[in-house]
Image 1 (cartoon, helix red, strand yellow):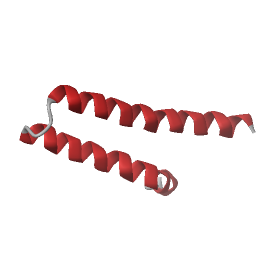
Image 2 (spheres, rainbow, N blue to C red):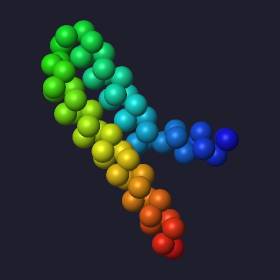
Image 3 (tube, helix red, strand yellow):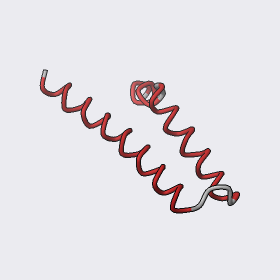
Image 4 (spheres, helix red, strand yellow):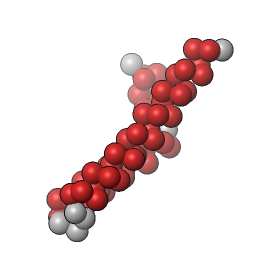
Amino acid sequence: MLQRLAKLIDVKSIVTISLTWVFAYLAAAGKVQVDQFLTVFTVIIAFYFGTQSQKAATGKGE
């Protein structure tokens, strides 16, 4: 459990979570349109999970 938590707390995860919260707040406050939020959020999540998937595939191949 501690190893999983340690892997979660890396720079990439912190940036992803921070950006998610910021854009969710801005969308809720009406400062960002919902479609703009959805676009940015999709890019952030796709990048995060894409790099996680690549890291897992690279680790298995070695």
